[in-house]
Every structure is written in C-alpha cells, then in structure tokens.
Image (cartoon, rainbow, N blue to C red; front, side):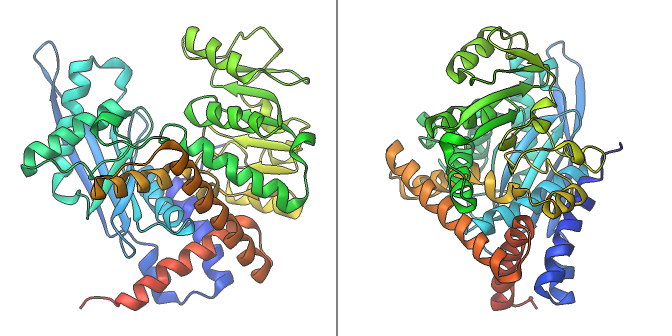
Amino acid sequence: MKKANPFEEALRTFDKAAGIMGLDSDMAKILKNHERVLEVSVPVRMDDGHYEVFKGYRAQHNTAKGPAKGGIRFHPDVTLDEVKALSFWMTWKCAVVDIPYGGGKGGVVVDPSKLSMGELERLSRRYIVEILPIIGPNKDVPAPDVNTNPQIMAWMTDTYIMHVGYPEIATFTGKPLELGGSKGRIEATGRGVQYITREALKYIGLEPSKVRAAIQGFGNVGSYTARFLVEDGIKVVAISDAFGGVYNPNGLDVEDMIRYRDTHGGTINGYPNGEPISSDDPLFMDVELVIPAALDEVIREDNVDKVRAQVIVEAANGPITSEANRVLTERGVFVVPDILANAGGVTVSYFEWAQNRYSYYWEIEQVRSELRRFMTKAFHNVMEVREKYNVDPKSAAYILAIERVASAMRLRGIYP
C-alpha cells in the first residue's frame, strides 16, 4: 500500500480535531500554514577534493508560544513535505506538554554512512551557515534527530558561535554534557514513554505486572523504553528492529539484548534466547501493550485488522495512519498519540535550553522528577479533554494543543 503524503496525513488529523472543537475557519487557515520554510543548497568539499551539493531544509511552523524547536535529520529520504509535517507535529507536541516553544524541523538529503568524519563535519557546519539567519536561542532551537547526534550538535554549536562572536550555547540542544548538554537527555524520550505508559495503564485499569509488551524498534527510543518498562514490572516478550526480532513468552532480558546489539553491528537479528520473528510481528502479537518505536505508518488500513493489543503507545512519529486510528478507536483499542507519548525528548531539550540560559545545571534526579511532572500532567490534561468531548485520545491531544496555540495567537493578534 502506498504511503500517504506525511503533511497531508498531519492535516487530516488537524482537520478532525478542529472540526470537533469548532475552531473558527480563519484561525484554522492560519494554523495550517507554516510561518516560513527555507530550502538551501549545501556545497561540501569531499575528501578527494571534488564538491557535492546536498539539498537542505528548515521549516518553522508556528512561533506564537515561543521559539521554533525541532530536530535536524540526515537521511537520503528527507523531503520538503516530511520536514513540513514534522515541524507541524512539533508545534502540537510542544503545546500538549505546555512548554514555551513552537514547531520546527530540519533535514539534509544525504546518506551519512557514505561520508567520512571530515565530510560529515563539513556538511554539518555548512548546513548551519545556510540556515543561520533563522536560528538562535530566541528564534529556532535545533536538536538531534535521525542520523544526527551530540557530536554533530557540537560542530553546529561551534559554527554558530564563530559567526555570532560569543559563546551562545542555547541555540542547540542534545549537546555533549561538556558543552552544556543536560543529564538525562539521551534517555529522555524512552523515559517519557515510561511515564505515559504508567498513566495509561492506570487510567484503563491494567496492572503492570499482568501486562505483556511488544516493541517494534530497538534504537535509542525502543531500547530505553524496553528497559524502563521492565523496571515497572511489565513483561517485554517481543522486540524487533529493521532486520528482524525475537519473541520469548517468558520475557526477554533487555539488558542482555542491548549488549548483543552493541556487539553485533547494531542489530538484534540472530539473538539466541527466543524465537526469531519479523520486523513487523510485534505490532500484531497477542499482547496487552504494543509500542511502535521505529517507523511511521506501520499500522495502516490494510493491516489494522491484525492488531490484537488493548493499548498502543505511539513512541515513533506517526506510526498509525488516521484511518487506522479510527478503526482502532471503534474497536476500543486505547491509542496514546505520538505528540503526547514521545514528547519526553523535547521536554528535556527544553530543560537543557533553560539550564543553558541560567548557566545552572541539574542533577539527573531533578531532570527525571521534572519530566515525570510534565508528562503526567499532560496525560491527565489530555484525558480531561477526551472526556469533555467524548473523543479518542489522539483527537483530544490535538484539541488541547490547538486551543493553547490558538489562544496565544488570539491574545497576540495578527500584525499589522
């Protein structure tokens, strides 16, 4: 089945929520459009002396509540529509957890695995030079995303500092600790999924010790999520990555699987302590909890009937299409939407930004405590809206987020 255009899919979810809440048409028109989208050419001198030119983007959807915020991804499949969709989602993600940001996202069309370290550094620095006019601690605060990491953020931070002429480190988050990064940032998205899953199970009356979980994806988000679910007494029985996976009805040893992955080329394919499964199998297993933590649109109209879980927590961005979400809702499946479930990363990025601006840094216990407070409050705010409008959790999350952004825009007014 052909994948939907990501931005069109995002707009469908927005339109549904806007219709339920009775958002006026003028405000809807404004919120469906981006403030600005920048497309840049990124020339890079390769190691052999010739030049390649890469296409780059930075989209800023809405800054009514604060600077744009969102990651930078390096991937050969980056498109303008993808970046627009992700920045659009970031606006609502920041609003639903009530942090003072709007949505941004950036990307470069490149396969970084084919670049040397020197080429990767030159690409990272030149991309920042190209988008320099629209970023800054009060404008737009980028972060790591697919195929970018703290080292790349360090190069980008240095490039920005060299151009502005003073050590402004709050322009980027996800930096190394030595350059003002926050403790707890690497685990943040998985930790946020843990806190949200706790509240979701409590809300629908499931005891964690009686819950079996299956996770698709074993990168940063999936592996930390698996580790933290086990902490909470949940039995993780299936995990997969892009190359395959493993099932064990007695529960998997997550720590052992992380060690296996880290010593076997970054994959768990071939892990011996369980039954081999395919990458998609965890989505359709007979378990109470499924966590898609990898790709978008993995649960669609053509396969949604195979879903057997009672609860799905969207750790990935957009893993369930709008049509599939409708079907699941009608069947009584409790779906925790991505803009709520995976907001732990951007929330701790906000903590990093705040720590940079105050030059005062938190211990890990404070980071986790504040993250738990933000995520728990956001979950219950969404459930209040769900009950008020009698809608599914995804619609409720969007209604809450849209109302917060629309309220800020009404108060500010439209200049001139």
